[in-house]
Length: 434
Image (tube, rainbow, N blue to C red; front, side, top):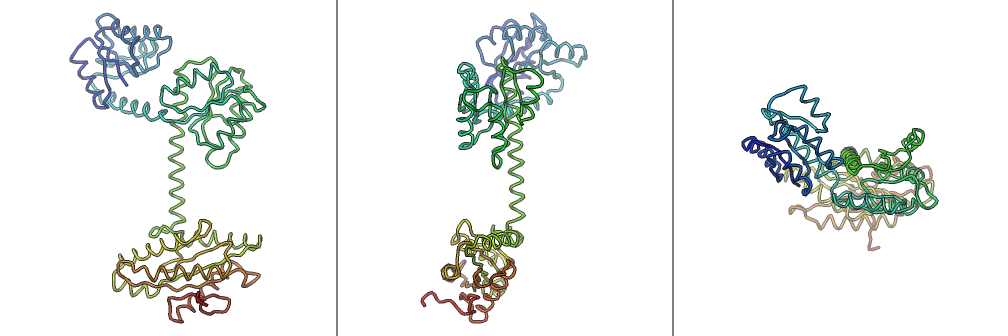
């Protein structure tokens, strides 16, 4: 990535060059406007900085020449002035220059360069683009230009294949025409994308089409496209529009990520990482109702660490917290993905086990009990008492009554020596050996 500095004075060139050194950008020096015109023909510059007063022409004249020579500039052209002058500002912007900065205060120019480099490097490189275009020549041009910038481009000529690819893969943006081969139009493809599940439907869509009448453009925008560009288009316009879409998607992705983290803090216990009491009650009620409606077995297990207050008093709360985390890990690792593992409060935990009858829940509970007894976290002997209750124990059962049954069973285990599993069915200890 190179920059062209057009400046007749070597001292001023060094000042400008120092600004580019700050962002590690290679520079090429042209002392005159004509020299600059020769250089742009054989170099791929990403930005040009030019002084207003050069030896052979004004900077505004050079900008106009560059636009004629290249038909359309594919880089920003920055004018640097010794002093502010409103008349020169107007002349600069009408000649095709991008922006104007003062040589007497280069701090603003340095800030601009930092933003420019960051946006150029991060906005489009490594982006995954789905291109839907029935014209092979147009698709070849778009694909080549995007791949030069570091994009990974998947090309389909029809909406059916494009929709299949979209549903099976994640893309950062979609570029599509309206007229496609096959039965699915571009508008139909857009509707299917916008009706997809989850966050896939918010992917930015850039429509590239020959249609230019107002009614058709409004129709396209109503379908939920993010931007619109008419054929034939300039390469630079396509890239800038795509960069803007990808930049906005990046902001949206970060917002969604922050929302997910916030939601996680609401439903997760901050110490153990298990679900908290709020989530347990909310989701547990739904699971119990669903199990009753569909007629599958469901069990609940209440787990309470034995003598936990004595552990805190003897070893301190720091060790106590570590023990809670290690036991939480055992509970999590010994449950399935569809199970709910939650910290109810203090040293008490609750497991909700769908598609698990009472016998299976008792076997699972006793297996976890043994693993906790053999754990000895930080050299501390730890045991736990378990209470099990299942939906089969009563007809008109709710989450609250099921919890009360399992909790009562757990207290029976406490009253009968601890480090054991009791079921609500008969309020008796479970012995796996029997």
